[in-house]
Length: 530
Image (cartoon, rainbow, N blue to C red; front, side):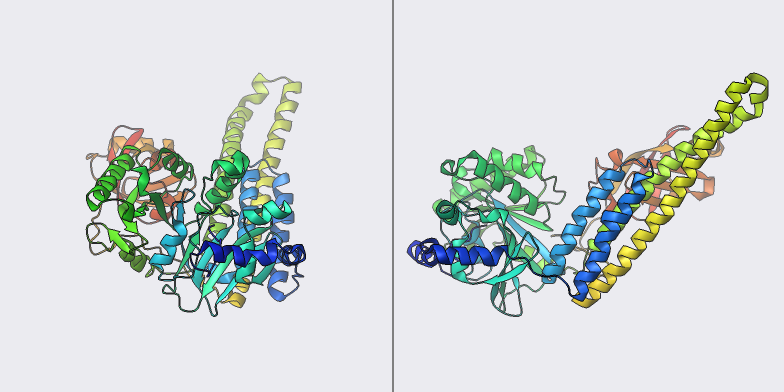
């Protein structure tokens, strides 16, 4: 976050004046600290409902998975805890939920603050100092009033003024040996006259810092930057034009995000180069991104000083923001909860299927056991059979209990969101350039495995090409396909799908038509039109 003098303009002396009240006066500094670390009593109706969800996840769910041997249960519980933390933030700042987040990332001193001031037409929104600041994510959005709010790690929300915000910097750390990055989780800056109703702009910490701050501080800021950038709906990545292309460190950092969507790259501070050189940097950057196989919407140059874009039509940034502003806005957290529970059910089905396979083998042996086993072996055999049956029964009961927990969580979530006036309809993100009238359909092919129990039907099919089928199920394990005409069932693995579709669970759905080409009795190629 670059917050050296919010609404203080770009004047370095003014920044120091704003800080002086809290930096030079220890009593004022401690008053600010006390305000920011305070812990509110959370006893209203919404918080009581939140405590119900907390108990369901931290107590009930944990107790159930302790009794079972379903693989991945610990990971699923961890994912539920992480999502619960997100829910706590939503309750404190519900205005952040029904909007798309546009994250502005880049190295320290890449000019993020000045860039945001320029594209948002807010001259005094963020300062334009080159001094490094505490790594706290700052959200900029439309609000019912002009204000600045801080959320600490106790989930307490405090309103602060410009002078207080300017004190939250490395200068405060130098003076009092205390970093606000360990106290504050996020800050919001709200403006009544904000241009975008459905967009939030996230000003992230520079993931790199000057050598003077030391490796420890840089690593801390990098982790915080990564954490916040990974949550973005869209990313605008800034690069200082003086580097001549996308720096290697930027490439490595972006790859570490595992971000699936294309990024809009902006070569910033374009006024420092001749126009002919600007376009050379753009082309060099595109070539490097292509070589590194990083998906991008476009690469443009921009001068915050002259408010000018350098691209084919000089309006790429504005068009990008205008288009994503049209997206259907709703909460995705319910969908995320459902996906986590779906993952548990998939693991349950895999575990149960394995146990049933073992029992089928046991059943076949049991038919002949009287002839081939001794009395002692028969007892061991019967005891083993009993234990496997008990495992299946425990799994079945646990799955029913987990289903009830999911139902209870979703019921409480709906109550909370109704109180907070958060929309919970299925959302649809409109990606830049995804105008459906102009979008061309694309056939994507995947290798598939034919289910063993339906292999026998393959030889009866005369034409092995262009067989019509449909998606029966989409899960965390992959996609299951049904060809009812020929009684065939196929499976495309997660690994195979991710070669072409990183976010296949968002793009593929039950009932979607597919084409199948058989290769032999065990293998096929599946085509899906997107």
